[in-house]
Length: 380
Image: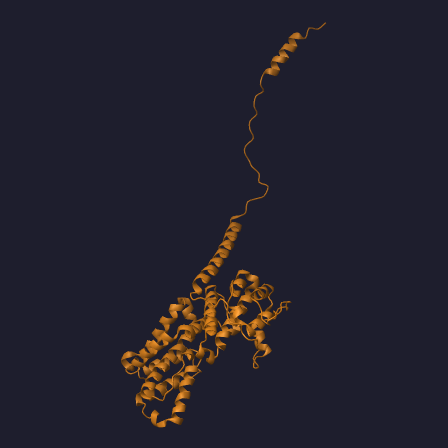
């Protein structure tokens, strides 16, 4: 019989002996998904920065543009049909391709509501926006949020709608009638203030109008609204300054003075790079300031001379035509009164009208020619 007790005792002692520890594996973590590359991180950061910058522009524009209160509840505009002279091609060039007509309709009073305008912007219902523009324009420039800001916040997909709204505002400035400006009722003033705020937002956000409306149309419309609202003080002061300068043109340089006045006024409203974009508007304004200064002298010498409305300022050749019409009326109705006009003023007036009437030249060329004639006394 085998005695295995010794072997079993040895085996028991072996099991109690601890096994040596194995060497740990080297640390090598493995990610289930790779980290983005530096280029991807940069693109994502740039995209987020652009979004934040755009939001900041909108917020700062709303805070700074509306420096005068808008009409909280503008008076209802009467429904009217489109002008007889307007054509389908004009509407197409202005509004682009017409969107699909939505089911939004008029309320019981035959008027649209602000929420319907916002819904039309969402759905790109250009036809409804056109109808609102023709019948209730104030809905496009008032409300909370402003329709333009609402369209901008919807992003790139609604950029064309924002451009359409800006184009409608620019057209409204040009279509404001002389009677409306002469009466300047509270409703007209509220609309102009709303236009100024909206155009300021569009300029701050660097929105541009379609090419067929001109690159400077937005800036020019903004400046024109300011003239309509609060340009009287600037124009009256400038007219008085130029009327004095024109009495001694060689020493006072009236055209050069008008250029400085215009640049100073425009620079107060626009940034430097934007001022360079409205050189034609500035040149037109310089010519108008000179004519207003001359007409102020005419009124001092000829009491029968009628006043020129200040809202004609920088609106194409409105000032020039107004001067020519009033001179023609004086020749027809009061030739004796017109004969009291000094020979110097007659010569200056004839020279200015002749040069500014040369529409084959651009604005800067006409102003330079006028400067040589009046400031330097050269024959042109």
